[in-house]
Length: 414
Ligand code: SF4
Image (cartoon, rainbow, N blue to C red):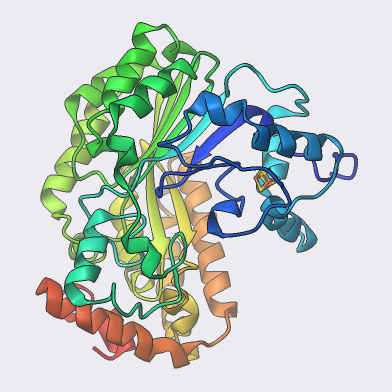
């Protein structure tokens, strides 16, 4: 990577990104939406309700960013990438360079859209926060956590009282979608996350319009869904796109997934998975997406045993970093050893059943998880925070960690 252009990134020339809170930003890694103050002296005009995609794309702010990048001058918004690189990790910038190369003139309209569609969601997952789920927001208000926020960080950044007064409904406005369509003629990549994108009433209509305008055949569509609702209309339209990647979030087998991704019901969810699997054509790549936390880690072996026969599905595995009190570091040394032993058993069992490349890759990943868990620091002093969080939610939701995940309950002391 030595010959790559320093402080230059193609995203400002190719992509538009939204936050669930209704703002435009450079990419999902850039920090302007979380208060990093730019050196730009004008008005950035990031509010989506007030600034159409075209207006932001052609606006002074983005042109200023582009100029800075072309002059190879670092800007505060892109500090996260520099930090990644300094620590030897691959940054989003470097990934974008691989994908787009050096682009020095912006196109008339973006070729990539990375859209988080507000916070409307039909689930309230344990690691989520009000800016990503309307259901979590309502729950926190009912509990009183909107008055006194008990945590300093959530899935999408700093948790504070401001999160409760944001206009999250901007993606429910027909104007947004019609303006977006006008900016879609050069699209090659289209990514939706949420909230839950498949319950947005305009999203499938927009996909329809992309087909009608003959844009869909050029587009790689990527969507992450909780799989609770999968509209038939959505499935029917997928073959019209160049490529599709559908990610289904799932955080364990059966009761564990129901508990973590409350109020998902396992049987109807599984029915949706089978319906999708049996109906989508080969241009649709299917993924299971699983997060690894201080509680889900105890169910990993059951999860892998369950998903192993679903060969059509590839997989993503994420470690939970935020909120900090849910990280796997909370396990004691003894618990880490227990998990490692369970995974060793699993590896022995599954290694005799390998039938495809995905299986080989999955075994490697399981080995990787076993390695990183064993080597992590001991943050078990944070367990009381996790215990108090789950205790309050269990009471409110009328569920029980012990019923759903006994080994996690032993570890957390609940
Ligand atoms: S340099 Fe990094 S933070 Fe800036 S736009 Fe590119 S990927 Fe995003």
